[in-house]
Length: 582
Image (cartoon, rainbow, N blue to C red; front, top):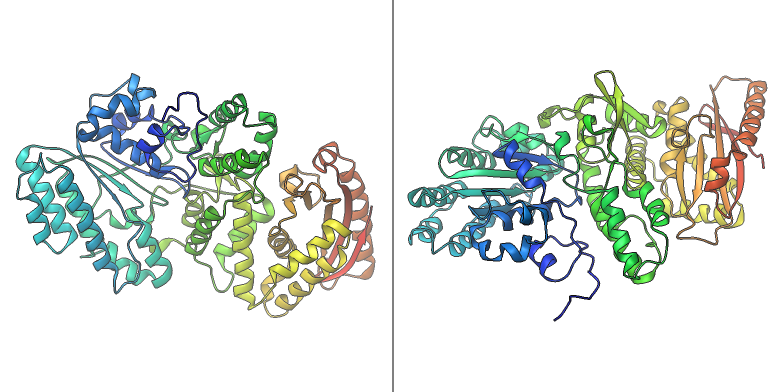
């Protein structure tokens, strides 16, 4: 098929590098980092959030280093950076690429699943390189029952022939993290400590790094498992926050613009590129993984960008849901991995702080054991590695950590709502909330929506004293207001100080006929406050809202909608006054 003049396809969801290159898919070239990786560490450890393009990058590395793809080098890499600037190590190794993503996390079946998975990988390795390995290699591997012994058999065969291996290990922490979440720390420690099979496997890898395993690239979503394995495997160099590699995984804005410009020139995009960037930026942008990269433009989640563009090319419209449902599932898995304190303890309070204030301050720990995951700095670091927080600035030796974008904000709203429900044994119907918000969006019927939330708040607060205080009231409101399909719920800090507590920005790209948007000011006073104080707060809220609505930035974001300004006054957990100001 002659594809010379055909428009490139979008490689959404694809991790097969040769298929992307050979079948006319658009590829964002990241091969310039190959030389930098080689010059930085032989045993390279690098974590990034899920759905960020890690697996495609690994498949590209596999093709670059594999001695079996030497004849295809020009075809695969000729038009890429590394094709024009190859390193001496190109096509030099036997590549053993492994992924732990498919290993079951049931403790009773886990070791058998691990051994079975490794058996298939090692068998495929032996067959692939049969002409290079001693003829008895496959037989030796199949005689062994345990994965670490199978790996030993492979490494001994390579050593006999004087061959070198490049080990690529994807999702190294996947099933171990699932064990930690579903079965607790005791089961998890049986994997990563003592004679645990995962620890023994990686110890075997280490044993052959002197003469066989020449290079490694290990990746996952957090350094927790690696920290617990370090007593048996302490050779990997964590480069996750190295500014040199800040832009290696994900898309820069320049790369996003170049992609959009390509399709615009092909006649596939009818909107101005700047307009599409403005749609994507609040949802997919703003990741920074190194405090020393703050002067650079932040990174986009590459998978989300491809999802958006793929959807747009088929309809000439942005997707109905800006958050890919596949990514939503992955983020939910991460949310459950962040253990919820049943008593609304420190971790839930940290999420509440981040949501209501927009930021937190802390240090990013390069490693920490699972048993200490609930410690404040470790928990914040975990949120950072999962992509739930990003580096926005410095506070002396500390880092300012903020929510990167609306995709993540939605996940944090859901996390906090889960924490409220768990701690207060509350059942709040999100579907009913969305029905009530429809009335807000299209019929200006806002009273029933806030009365419903306020009733749930009061029910929970009468059970749990933790709900006392302004931060709890605003956090509760924001966590549930944020989970809707009609508005982007922006708290004050997102619109700069001096704006109303919450601004419901209309989701006009998906719902262009929506007639109303909302500015909401929440006032709080203690349960023993007098009526006069309540009235004064209501008056103050009205004055502030009149100023907010007149703000040019607010007028710009309202689009074609009419802004409704609402004042809510809480006395303790009771909503005692509410009023439409305009």
